[in-house]
Amino acid sequence: MARIILVTGGCRSGKSGFALEKANSLGRRKFFLATCPRIDSEMDARIQRHKQERIDWSTIEEELELSTIFDSIPSESVVLLDCLSLWINNLMYDASNKNRDLTQEQVSEACLNLGKHILDSKAKDIFIVTNEVGMGLVPENKEGRLYRDLLGICNQTFAAIANEVYFLVSGIPIRIKPSTVNNL
Image 1 (cartoon, rainbow, N blue to C red):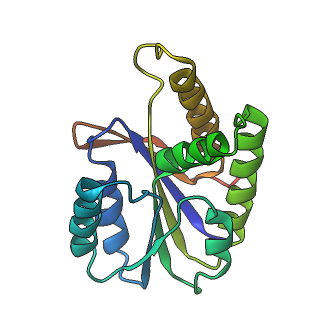
Image 2 (cartoon, rainbow, N blue to C red; image 1 turned 120 degrees about the horizontal axis):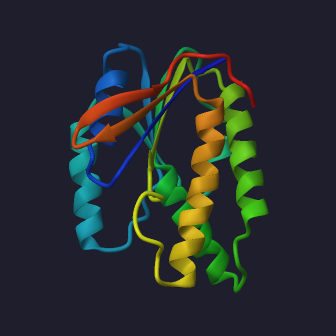
């Protein structure tokens, strides 16, 4: 069973850098699972810059169907999933393109399904990055509030199954969950 490390915090708090540093220290074959959509030239430039920072990583770009990726990860690998925040955004965008709303029940089901695939993965260590968006003001519009709620549900699901959880503040990691038995 994989060891799961959830890394959360605000935007630009150092989450991805922390997860990369921890994962790089393990010295095994590494896979980076990127959920960021390519929406414009500025985002393309960011994606290229980040890929150059991960020269010894195999990058897999997938915006929606994350569960199936974990079925094909080789044994004893390290995986960094960056990030759940964009995955939830992508699921909401996909639903809106199909003229439907994404419900809390659908997100719970998708997160539980992904969690089961992660737990069953042959990977040795899986780092999951996500944003903490529930510490600020209540968003002023329906979509913003829905996103905050759905990401909160997702984050709680993965914090529950994680062996370790880190919260980053201004680049400083705070360990908020020690190693425990997975309880999915």
